[in-house]
Length: 79
Image (cartoon, rainbow, N blue to C red; front, side):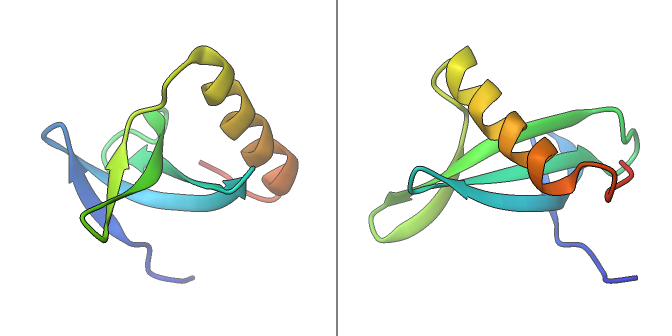
């Protein structure tokens, strides 16, 4: 099993479950280290030549990123 990258988001520890590029945007799929049912998606944006994780802009964008995750990992990933 590979060691997963971890980060702190809003005071909670999350692990990066997957990353997927959709329409030129990199989405990062995260699960809480303590509660795998606590799942969230952030996108990577460039700010001052640095990659920053930020929230999604709309429900449509969330659905787009989630559908890409499901399509890629259907039946392959247990969260």
